[in-house]
Image 1 (cartoon, rainbow, N blue to C red):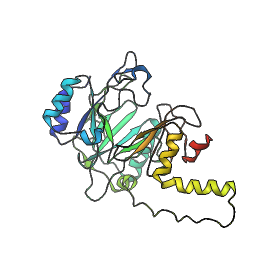
Image 2 (spheres, helix red, strand yellow):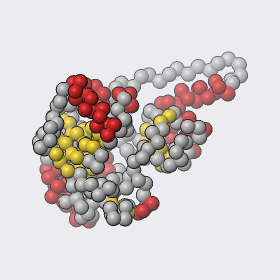
Image 3 (cartoon, rainbow, N blue to C red):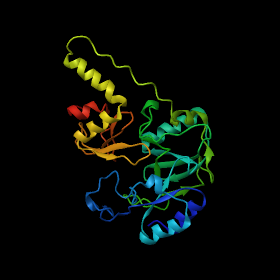
Image 4 (tube, helix red, strand yellow):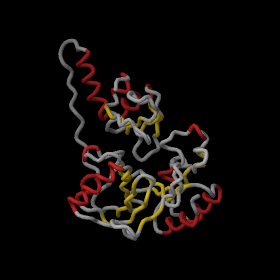
Amino acid sequence: MADIRYALRYAGAGLRVHPLYEVDTSTQTCACPKGAQCGEKQRGKHPRLGSWQEKASTDEALVREWWGRWPRAGIGIATGSASRTWVLDVDGPDAMAWYDAQVIRHGLTPTLGVRTSRGAHLYWRWPDDAVVRNAQGLREAGAPGVDVRGEGGYVCAPPTVHRSGHVYAWVHAEEGFAREMAPAPSWLLDLVKERPKPPPPVMTTPRGSLSPRQVAAMFRVASDRDPVIRERVGQLAGGRLHASAARPYMDGIRCPKCGRPEVWFYLDEGPAVCHHRNSCQWAGPITALATGAP
């Protein structure tokens, strides 16, 4: 069970907090309206508040009101510029091995950290000269299971209880951890910061009739960055729209590879990704959701 004293402590330190649905670890039942039917990825982790990105707060009276209403609620810390922090979520043996390899290559920078059920949350100071993106995976860096919680994201904070029964806990005594957040080393910041978006591709219409392959290619290019097309594909695939998120996205879409409703994608750009505890690791263009082909 999370403790209001922790929520107040975080808020007092300038970290914007918000309540999460708790989970009964003996029955694997989430306190949300879906109960035992809540998706495995979200169970005991997702926010109680709609539009939590705007509502997360450091206000003591508001924090007391929330945990007075939901005393067992988990604690979410909203990452981003307002909280002056971002978090690297290193989840699983492969992710830990990747991070250890980077430390060997670049050197160790100790920072504030949390022991999670399968790895660690590494808290870093928000940079003054960059925006850290909120990203599911760092595939371009060959980093499986490494997520970035930046602008518009959040993490579960100690002593929130994971669905496995693990209690999130701060780590101070182990090598690589410190009692204060450190600025991220340049090699890591280069991987996680937002990059200028390239200009949209210029669409040209071939003369004469279009072949099915040409039509498919044009659709693929248009769907890479057109939010209207991407939203429509998500709706046709049965997805849920999260328009109030700092970076709107679709989720709840059935995976064309494993069949689980765990696919999501951002509306502005990027691939569709299947992500749950035992994910099949499928990732592909959103056009695959329209055709059902993996």
